[in-house]
Image (tube, rainbow, N blue to C red; front, top):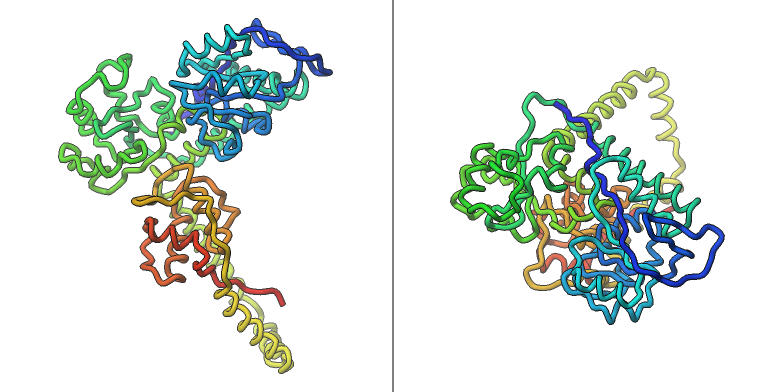
Length: 450
């Protein structure tokens, strides 16, 4: 049965901070917990990719001047890297003269103390458990970034939009008597995301059962059990769909202990970068959408059936036209001036010529040996492939540059392969990518205007 969306997808913000100097502004000072911010921050450093995701969702990306390596969102490509969460550079952070530094509990606490001792304003995020805390999270970040009135209101609106989108996604989950059993594995040792984690809870939101709800003691940290125990949990639940971190799929497929699983037999193993589960902005809805689409393939087939039904209706409408009307249309077609026919021939000729137009090389994607993407993968860099395919006319931009290698992306890539003399198998390999992003690639045949 379909489950009701819980608010545990939310997160809240609690702040610990040191004093930082600023000048007064019309919508400031802003009080967040026990801390007071005097003016709108001109320079922000994000040590938390979750907060970065929320800042992006709220539209304050321009203020982010520094980020950790975990903040891989494409919107932050222009921000300076200050190292990893585990070892951020205090020197690089202070060189950016940030008005605010956002962090979370996974950031090196010794570094945060050093920043605080040096007078840097540090705001620390903690996880929330309900919708009220979600509102607090977004409205607090909004207030810090844009003031008490506009900032808080913007944050509240974005928080509500996030929950509404997740609710809308849940509505498309098919009603079933037996929910699908799925899981997320962090590595080839089958280390799972239990239901106590945000990642694990997403299966509930997607109307599925987390295979590791069968763990004897979910309060233990992931990795405290032997691989054989995790494998037994998977077998007991007969998991039908496995999600895993990038680079883990092939190792799971080759694991003899998992060979009898339905998910392995049917090839239902899909990679999702583990970092996305640390983010609680728009990435949440992208990930949930991907999981739902993957676990319920009938949703895609349902779209096709709807399209087929529409085609039938159009056909019936065409057939129902009065005979006299059809005759008139035929006569109109026959009576076209010869000059018009010539013009149409020229248009067709132009269309053929356009398919041979050269394009410029695109260096946005770093292509290295063994770089490949497989259908079912959700990965930041894949959106660059989608954008390149769209530029060449193979992919519809309206389908979005999501980073999800789904059916529409596969169809577009196959069309590129066919047009460029490659085997149209939909497999994205290093060689194919080199051609796709080169100046030698053939774009899709395009019809020119009259």
